[in-house]
Image: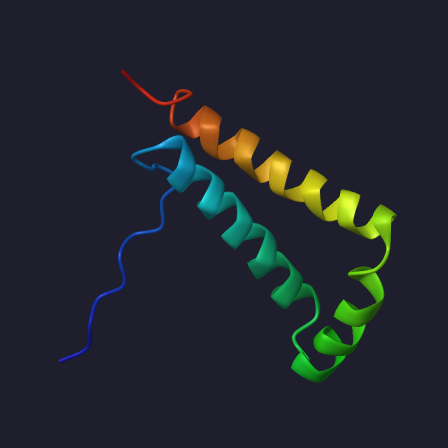
Length: 77
């Protein structure tokens, strides 16, 4: 019997889980954009030493976190 995948959702229990989801979304975006692992690892050597690239990565994560936070009503009470 195949395991069912959990439904995709932006809902998380805590802001920390929401942030981890935002990081995961950003990473999936990179993997989708550059599916060749060899090229991906080669490029990592370049962007990991470039402040502008690192800032851009942080901005993408922040945008994803903003979306997740809004979906969670900024962590429901």
